[in-house]
Length: 452
Ligand code: F0G
Image (cartoon, rainbow, N blue to C red):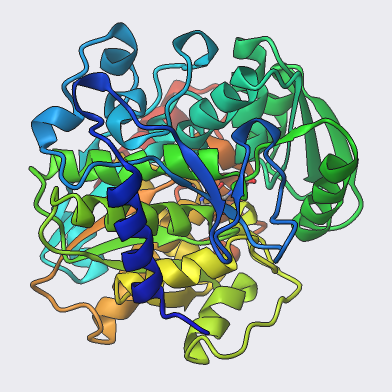
């Protein structure tokens, strides 16, 4: 029997109601880890990378009660929940022992509003939630605090990921903070210098694989099947739980009034899956009354999910990815199935934008004083494209997520602004001027430039 996603959600929800006791007043029900596809439950302390029956990914039933009010959700006044914008929402997260929690005060990121960027995006109301303002400069820290804490709680000593750079930087940091060893597989020569530097500096064991991210992840999944190494890529359901808090926090910032559209970049699609899960839970607990459309934006040369969406989710084909936005240079996203469910549940859209569109959107975000890395700018480029095509109405409210900090990829900034020659630079290119040490030349240069 094939069940629709809606039916599956209802069945899970019914089960959740029948098995759950109240989680209020800090009384949590046991966390249930089960295969998202066939429902097989597993012991969370021996979390396999995939289901032994059907190969599906695992998901977590945090045992939410039928309704949580916003007050009850954030009532915990412990130090951890006041410093961490993830653990603040622990009523919607799996229960973990307090002494296993590794937190660096992640989350609590701002939503920026700038009329120039709304005009560029072609919408009246645009907020940009900046996840680059997390401790290691990307949204990955939200999932990592939960993933690494779970690893610690089950006695893991080595935690590992394959990465296009941000997950590795985050894992290296959280593992070091929690006293665990980190193993990182990266595609050789294909991640930015800043992300590599972070990962090196925090002491991870780094293995550079000849090949792309998809090869590195598939090799690591096989290795973690063989060796007692805890996998923290976003196939890990605890990572997804932490990343849900981007949306939960966004809704709290918006007074629990959902926007019409939430836009984000898509690579391995863990974040799209996490956003979908957060929206299902927020809606089903009654914390929000409407479900925003998810808009996942991919780079044109790395758009297998957009292809899949365009086929009406009929044909999925992995590709060999190529894009300037190295963070999302992924051709066979691990969370493709659950990201599809997120798009279907929210009646969402998957779009693709060119590298040129990404870099121009980034230059606008940077020029407004906000700044982000290239993959993050796919968000705004996608909004602009869909608003231009009439698929987002001018009156619809949009919140986009900027996933990484500008300093994550300085090579991209310098290439855009300095280029090999001015003609190859972007339209907002800002080239430093070199002069000899002469006051006359300095004065004339400054007057000239300021009058231009
Ligand atoms: N934006 C940034 C800055 C990222 O680093 C990533 C993913 C994404 C967007 C896409 O998120 O994979 O959940 O769809 N980076 C991973 C990494 C793959 O290894 O750092 P996704």
